[in-house]
Every structure is written in structure tokens, then in C-alpha cells.
Image (cartoon, rainbow, N blue to C red; front, top):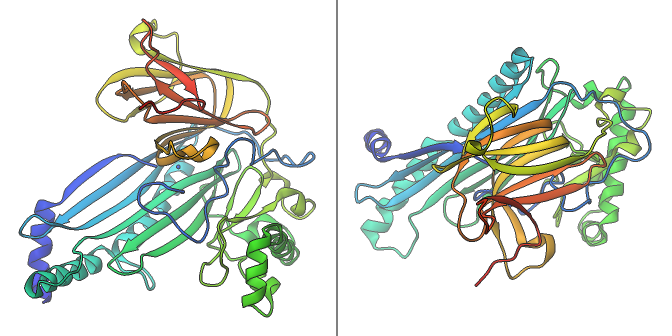
Length: 422
């Protein structure tokens, strides 16, 4: 069987369809949708509000730019049936003026890719999943069994906070090999000054008191969700102890409003949202430099054709190709924060924020001041397919879409009052 697999792997690689492009910085992205905890960082409207009081401390620092590269491989059987789709997202970090730290972070992110590809712990790697897919395909075709032959493995990554102090990522994966899909999430945090991986113990001088405050904060966050806490209380003799045990090194990340913990679905259910410990609960314990940035300024956005702009009059901080099409400037006057470009899909049966779902996050900037992203993409005739989100000086969330303008100008940014036609 191993010899057959080796030969088949070679055949599959010949037939693999590999597509690399910009992806989605953690929800409904790609095919990985964890049922045990949605990310806390991408909050609609102003749900992820500014830190309480004067809990600011992180320096704005150098601009952090992140392009997410998606690798997608389709493996086919000899009859050209796709039996496995394997994908993952690799964040590519750039810190202006600090190439060394960015390189250190990127090297660690590549190691996470390698662990996913080869398999780690109890999780299967690509070759093991492919072997299972081949065995399943052979069984189905030989026995004419009423079973599916399509397997998939997908992993996404989302940046949840980036500034002069920290860069955080939340990872989500979904492996389907027949039966019940296997979901998993984890997070990783880095110093944007040195590139080193951050641990909880490194955030405070009194590590024990800090962990106690985090545990109490997780319990308090769970109690705010009455359904979650009531069900957990029915299933656990010590619900508070179970919640406190969720304070682990590989399941936390920074957001604008606090430190979020990813519940383990096997222990805490129904945890529909990551549990956030607000920064106010960590005052006097956490090193001040890890509190969010003090923000200021206002901003306005515009989208222009590159051909409309005189050379040298717009500062371009990065370039991104989404698809063959027009060359555009996504231009910002003033200062905006957490600027993110994503593909999305629209649910016209829903209302309000529930209509818009991130598909792939393509690009992120920690802040932009009087500058532009040069973007190559097709502007569709109908419903837009690219979404621009950002937060302002008050940490309020905003959402815009790149659309045809309907006039001689040809392109415009529209707000989220748009609705699908037809």
C-alpha cells in the first residue's frame, strides 16, 4: 500500500492544481468555520469598543503590513475525480524600518505551516489525509459504496492586533475525512519590536497574580453569556474551575479591547464566541506597553484609478494584486487604523451586520496616514466583492465596498447600506 501511495502521490502532484494568492487577516473565512468559538477581534459596528479609562501604553510604532498568501492544492484520482482539497494561509509580515523583526516573525509563521502540512500531535498531515482519501476512493469504486470521495483540509489565519508592541494571529482549521469534521483553533503572539514569541508570563512582572486575574476575567466573560454559563453549570461540578483552566499558552490573543481566549469545545460548550478579558481587569498587573495605542486624528477614504493621478502625488505604502483588472489607489486622507481588505459574500436574507461575511482576508495595515494601497482588481458590474474595513481614533468599526460608481468616474467606495438587486 505504501508503494502504491508513493506512486499515487507523484501522480497527484502532477495533477495538483496549486493556486497562490492573497487570502483571508480568522469567522466564515474559506472553509474553516469553528463551531466552538468565533473570533472576538472582528467586531461589527462599535462592539469592540475603546479600552476603558486611560489604559493605553503600546507605542504606535512602525507601520505593520500583512499580506495573506493562500496556498490551495487539489489532488485528483486517476479518473480526475478530486479526492482532496488541501489549503492553508501564510501571513507575510512587513514592519517598516524593522526588517529583522519581520523576518523573525515570518520564519516562525512558516514553521506553523510546516507543522500543518506534515502533521503534528494527533493531527494528520497532508500525506496522511491523502492516503486516507486514496483508500476511501479505492473502497468506494471497488465496492460501489454510497460514500463520498471528497476530503478537505483548510486552515486560515487572521491578524487580530498589530502595533508598535504586539502582533497577534488567530488560526482556525477544519479537516473533513468523512463523518464529523474536526475543528481546531489556536493563537500566536509576537513582539513587533524583536520578533520574539510572547508568552503570558512575559506580559507581567507578577506572573501568578496576572494569571489569576486572567482566570477571573474568563469566568466573568462567560457569566455574561447566560446560556453558556447555565449549560456549563449543568455539565460541570466546578464550572468556574473549568473556565479558569482555559487560560493556556496557545489559545490567547490580543484584541483592541482585551485579551481573548479560545474555548476548547471539548470542555466548554456551547462557547459561540471567544472569551475576552477586558484590559480594565488587568490594570496594575500587565506591563503598560501591552495596553492598546492611544489614537488620534480623523480620516476619509477614496478610490481612484491610477491613471487619474499624477505620478508622485500619492504615497504608496504597498501593492496588492487580487485579480487581473484595473489599477486603483485605495487612498486615505488623515489617519485610519486596522485597515483591512477582504473578499466577502452577502446574505440578502439576513439583516444589518449579519448580511456581510468575510470570505478571505487579503491585506492589512496597522495604520495608514495620507497614503494609499495600490490595488489591481476587477470592479464588478453588480454586487461588490471587495470589502474595506477600518477602525477610527475611537476604535469604532467602519465598513466600505469598492463598487462601480454609476457615473463617468467609474469607481467609488460605498457604505454598508448597499443591498443586492434581483
